[in-house]
Length: 109
Image (cartoon, rainbow, N blue to C red; front, side, top):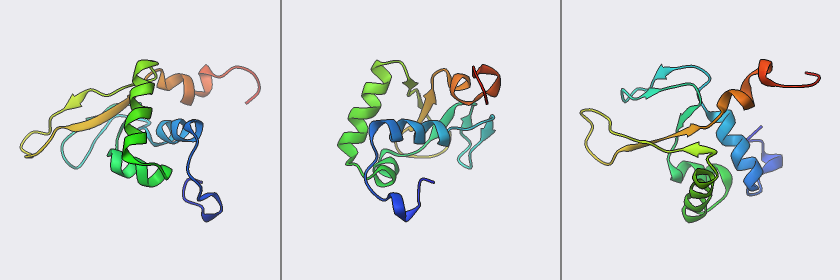
């Protein structure tokens, strides 16, 4: 749904938020770089988000900062052992279960 050519316009903030939630890991696993992702985590560069959302990197940075201020996400810096270069940013969706668990939903499914 995120890559269909019919919907090639830039994302709204709501769509960007839904994209983040949908891209988050649904269960713990290790990435190829040895980074552990927990449920509700995603690893994605701001450059890749900007490309996916049709935004500038500056707009992505401002949006992520807004989400952090609203306590919707956390971005703890994680260092990748044995890999030179800057630390990897992994985004944690706060209250991930609230958005993804059927048991947490109220009303008809």
